[in-house]
Each structure stands twice: as C-alpha cells, then as structure tokens.
Length: 451
Image 1 (cartoon, rainbow, N blue to C red):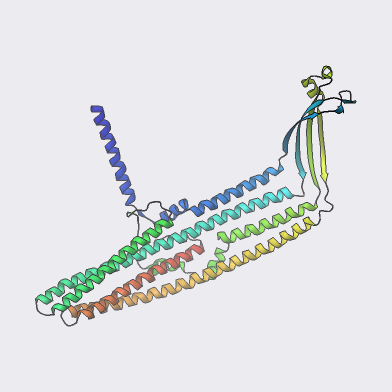
Image 2: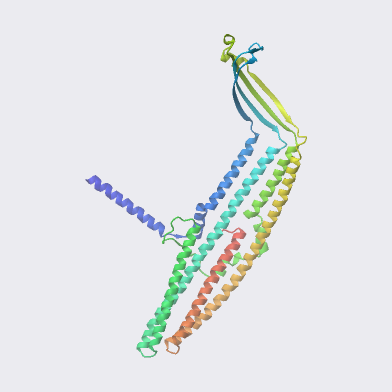
C-alpha cells in the first residue's frame, strides 16, 4: 500500500511539473529572431527546396561515378533439337543443351572531357540550388518580419484604443459631477456615455485585430497549435528614426553591395557557368571516345545422344574459359548533325541564361530603389505625424479644460479627442511602416533582420 501511494505521489508530482513547464512555455514571448528561426525550421516550401538541393547532390555523385568502370555478368541456357554440332565438331542429328556464364567490364579512358565537364556542371547546379534555398530563407525572413511588425502595429492601435476608453471613463465621472452640481445638462452625460460605448467597441475591434495578427504570424511560422498564449516581445523603444536612420543608404550603394552576395544573383551566375560547362559536354561528341574493356566467358555443353562422351561440368567450365582484354576507339564521322545542333542549343541556352541574369539584376535594382524611396517617404510621414500628434494633443488638453470648466459641449470635447486618437493611430502606422521599410533596406544590404 505504501508503495502504491509512493508511486502515485511521484506520478502526480511529475504531471504537475510537466504542466508547469508547458504553462511557462506557452506564456513565452517570442522575439523576431526566434520567429524567423522557427519558420525556417518548419516551413514546408523550404523543406521542398532542401529536397531539390539533395537531388542535385545525387546528380553530382552520379556524374563523379562516371569515371568508374562498369561490371556486368551474364548467364545463358540454350536447348537445341535436330541437327547440331557434336563434341567432335561434326554436324549430326541430336538433342543438346549448352550453358554459358560471362562477366565483362568497360572503363572510359577518354571522352573528350565530357565526364569532367559534366561533373563541373553538376557542382554548379548544386551551388545554384543552395543559393535558391538561401533566397527562399531570406524571403521567408522578411515575410515573417512583416507579420511581426503588423502585430506590433495592431498592439499600438490597441493601446490608443485603451487610452481613449480611459479618457472617456474619466470624462463620464467628471460629467456626472458636473450634472450633480447643476453646471451641465443631463443630456451631456448621455452623450459622453454614448461616446464611451463607441470607444469600447473600437477597443474590442482593436483587440480582435491583435489576435488576428498573431494568428497570421503563427500561421506564417507553420505552427500547428498557436493557442491564445502565443505572444511576441516589443523590443522597440525610443524614436524609430534615430534607431534606424543608419539603414537608409543611397540605392546605388546598397545595390553595388547587394549584387555581390544576394542569392538570386549568385544563383543566376552559377547557372550561366553551368550552361557553359554543358556546352563543352555537347562539344565532346566531336572527339573520339576511347575505352578499355575486359571480359571472361565459359560454357558447358551436353549432348543427349552422346551422353558417354560428355565431359564433366567442372572440367568444361575450366577448359572452355575465354579471357578478353582490349581497347575500343569510337570515331564520330557523321551523326545526322545531332552534335552540331546540340552545340547550337547549348549556346542558345547560355545566351538565354545570361539575359535572365541581367533581368534579375535589373529587378533587384528596381526593388532597392523602391525600398529606398518608400523608406524616405515613411520617414517624412513619421516626422509629420509627430507634429500632428503634438498639435492635436495640445488641442485636446485645451478642449478638456474647457469641458471640465463647463464652457464647451461634449461634442467639442469628443471631436478634439477623436482627432487626437486619429493622429496617434496615424503616427503608429507611420512608425511601423517606417520600421518595416528600413528592415527591407537592411535585407537588401545584407544586414540581419533585427529589431
């Protein structure tokens, strides 16, 4: 009985510990870097691209093994009826059977450098696949960052909504006191309560928007179960312009740096070089092909008519053995212009890939230009929003003082409060839009995406 109680206590204690650890894990607030790392580990598209990369590794291994000799074995069993050759090499009427066993190998010695260039092309294909995977990781990182910043923006809007509710609640109490003192009519109390109800609706919408933004982020991370406890940190403190102004660099400077390392450019460069190697593979068909071959063959013959003359199986297999060793040279003379056309197709593929690379560079430059001017515009909008917030804040304070003194109506107070809230919302939008634009510039400049 004591043993049962002891094990039961240990089981309950372990369950409590596991539950507490899970609760601590669910209450964890995720950083942007943790979100990006989780997304890279669990994203299905990245896993598919990893399989493409592994496929290129297999192709490279196959090309490297082309240097090795092959080895094949063969076996045969024949039956003959009627006239056939006897053991004395005389054609007679008899039934006979023969068994054969052979093994042969062939090794390429010279293939016009075809195998060497195939290996080089497969190496370049593997590098291109790796860069394609890196580009997918970069795209996923900036995508996660945009969802992350959207959550921060919606949280800022929720804080503005909370502020509006608190201000309205405060004014409800003050208006109640004014009504009790007979300084304002009862209708103003109803009006301010109606405004409080509107602010609470806005607050509910803002809270729902935060939850939806967190859900979008969790789905972008490929989380199976995000739950209501999924949350993120808010690392941004201070003036964002001062924090991230160093990210706004001239687009030409960013492009000249980006073109040397961005994975989409490196991928295209590797593909161009791969097609050049494949051109040499096509040209290798113009050259003679030299290979070394070796073989061994033996057989067993059995005559049903001359059974007493048949030698034993083992003796025939030993005596009938044939060994062969030699060189094989194949000289191409005319193959219906297939080699010439293959070479032409390879040259066309090179030109097309070079055009694709130039187009990729132009697209990259356009994206950097757009990101730069968007960041500059976002910075100017944020600076303007700060002035708007300061002006509407002062206007609201003045309206609040007049309302508390009974010198203005609730409509004037609500109008000033609404304009103040609107300016705060616009400032939040400008703030996080500016942060996102600077992070995009960091992305192009090769700076890790951090907040």
